[in-house]
Length: 257
Image 1 (cartoon, rainbow, N blue to C red):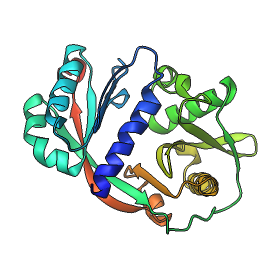
Image 2: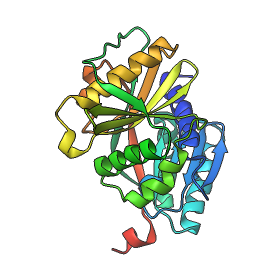
Image 3: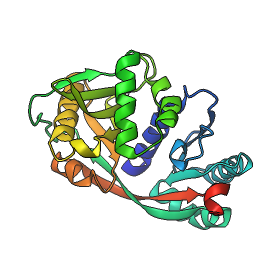
């Protein structure tokens, strides 16, 4: 199995860990794919991750059918091999490509050095979880009530994901979510609101968190980069493994707006 396919499998596990506790979520799984439908009217909260496999086409068709049946938008990410085989199917089903997301990895032999000391706390308990949710909503311009339903409720001690907050004095500045699987961990929801950007807090948070995970036996990290975060990740030593296309299925409101 090539590295991109391996990382896509890890991304499916991360999707399950991050969405599995959302009240009312509909989850469907296959060996190489995961579908999570929260019921929210934004595609960001209804996601499909799919790798290469003998059942990939059937899983894609079934996933899109479920989203359509529920009138939900959907964002789908496929591995390069899966996309090569299934792009015509995706188009026929009504999905359309809307941009690229580099799949990046920081390998075990790449050193991790905290950029500067910063106070970091894990988001546990209602107060800290709410603060992390506020940072997520502000950073991604997402409705706070949707974040509460789909993020806050999943940040628990036993969820399989860990969210961390960086502080400047008493002011929360940035948050990041880590999903460890063995010696590899996924990095997601890197959230620094616009008013706190370009102050080095995202770098300080991520580098310190990764250094801590390294001390606990995690040697490799992976993420899907946004355009805004790409330069930061490269500067920390992440390398692009593959360019993944984001495919969007529009919901009824978007399709007729």
